[in-house]
Every structure is written in structure tokens, then in C-alpha cells.
Image (cartoon, rainbow, N blue to C red):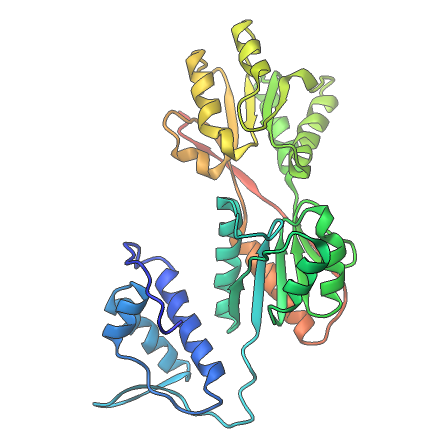
Length: 353
């Protein structure tokens, strides 16, 4: 890392600079063998990580208070000397998303990694966002083993990776997060069904029962639909399967055809993040009023799209990171019980009068 240079950030107030400096210090400490070592100057560290000297100074002062660093007046800042037998080596936690190949991660994936990485660093772990180059199962497994991590958090793995997850979990502490997870592993899920059920009841109270959606073809989509379907059935209504459109790389022609035929939804779920803007533009093209006529429902990133008015889902990113870290630390402490935790997400109104 010493030779790496980071592009200057305009977001010094974000956790970015703090995480970079913490990671650098703890990595240096782990490689120092307990010896005291002088750090580069604050000016050099600021240039190295692309942050302000104020950010560097603030973080170094905190690490001095925590006993990780010591200052020598007129000389500089040093790693605090420790006995050869302690402290314990910093644990390195691998963070993997989806198929785990070539860092092809969505915004959602990077947010999960960033939130969990922040919590792990707060618990004095080192964090390694991982990418595995091999797509073949045995090669993927071997490459995963050769990363030499002490623990693993795997976000949103496809079911094809479950055999590998089971194998790796027998060797190192592992936590899995997703809409479907291996039963044998410590895991986290988010209950989208309960939220969509409550949303469905709220829509019905508003007199809205014409429910449409554009969905990704994944297990998470079905969890959302299950809640809406339940709410409608309890009210003696039904979810029209012809008005649920599954997205590929473009908006389905059937959606445009339905709008051209004069059909209008009074609630529309945009589950496909790649088609948010295009879907909203299409509905606007047919002069659908989001304030009164149609309640839009989507992820929190949608609130940035001009003209959006409706409900946004907010993923509990911080809670996911805290729960995953707690499950890992419990395993490091020798508690090998398998636990499955369920978290909840909420919705909030945006631009509604």
C-alpha cells in the first residue's frame, strides 16, 4: 500500500479517509512484528491517500488516544511498541458479493461492502474486498482458500455457490447475506415480504388496487410480490400477473403496449434498479401523475431522479454490517452455533404533497 496513490477526494467528511488511514496503520502494525516504527509525516500520508492533512491529523490523534500510536515531540509519530507475544494479529475479513468475479458489483453490492467494512474496522479487523478470477467451481474454491482471510462475509451469493460456501464455512468463520442462504451457515436476510405486505395494506386504504411492477428475475422480486399478493387476497382482490413485467436489458414492450391501450396503474413497483429512470420517463410520457394518480415504489436511489414522487425503500446497510460482524466475532470466540437472523427494511415518502 505504501506506493499506492489515491485520487484526491472532495468528500473528506465521509468515512473514506478515516478507513484508509486506519487500514494502513493496522496493516503496518500487523507487519511490524511488535516493533515500534515511525510513520510518514501527515503531509506525506495526506498526499498518499488523497485526503486533507486535517483528516490525517484527526485520525492519528484518535489512534494515539487508543494506544495504537505514540508521538515523540519534535520527532514524529510512531507505532506503539508491543510485546512480541501480543497483541493478537489483526483478523483479515474477506468481503465478497454475488458471483464474486472481477469486482463486477452493483451500487447495492458496494454499499453492502462499505457498510460492513466500516463496522469491521471499528472492531479492529482488517478488510479485504475480494474478487475471484476463476469461474470454474474447483478453481474458484482454491482461489478463495488462497486469499488467506480469517473470516468471510458473502453478500447475495447465487445458489450455485452454496456448495463452495458450505466447504469454506467448515474452514473459517463465514456469514452469508441474501434473499436465499445455505441453512448450514450463519446468515442474514431482510424481510421484504412483511414490508410489502404492510405497503399493500396501505395502498388499499388509499383506494389503490391496480398494482403493476417491473421486476428483476431473482428471488428478491418474489419476496416483494408475496407481500402485495397477500394484502390483496385478504381484501378479496388479486395481483394481476399480466401487469408484472420482468426486465431484461430493456423495458418490456408489453409495458408500453398496456399504457398505449389506456391502462393506468395506481401503484407501480420499480424493483429493477437498472430501469428506474427509463420506467419513470415512460410513465411520464403517458402523463401519469405521481402525486395523485400513481404511487411509485422503489429503492432509495430513485429519489434522485427528477420528477419522482412516491415511496422509497431504505436498506438497513449499517444494521447488516453490525449483525454480520457480531456473528463473525461470536465464531472467533468459539461459539459455533448456526444462527439465522432476519432484519427489516422500511419505506419513506419522497416529494409527496
